[in-house]
Length: 149
Image (cartoon, one colour):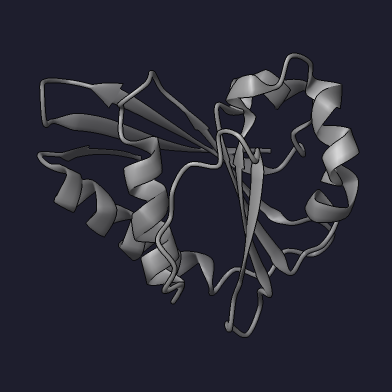
């Protein structure tokens, strides 16, 4: 599925809309994982801000570039944590393991968003959602959703 947005506001709104659908999903064995790809400034963090808003998170969302992982509590029926990961600084996929990856990804009550997911692609669960972001012009973005299984 492919969408085009014409502003940061539209990109956030698309994230909010997706969040409303994500809360309905109940996975059986693993967390619900969204793997983001796209160059710097393509709209990944802006989209995450919309997702968080749609999930009812009131805190200001910033990319956890230096923290790498940031958790937010959820009050939805099927999910308890929204986990925002920025894998940009990870040198090897196994670097995420020391941050509790197995526990995070093994809990079906978690929604995990990974910016720069290509850095840990080898350890992503088989079932996840790939979301790619591309600059079309200064404000226009192409956002593509693909279910991996």
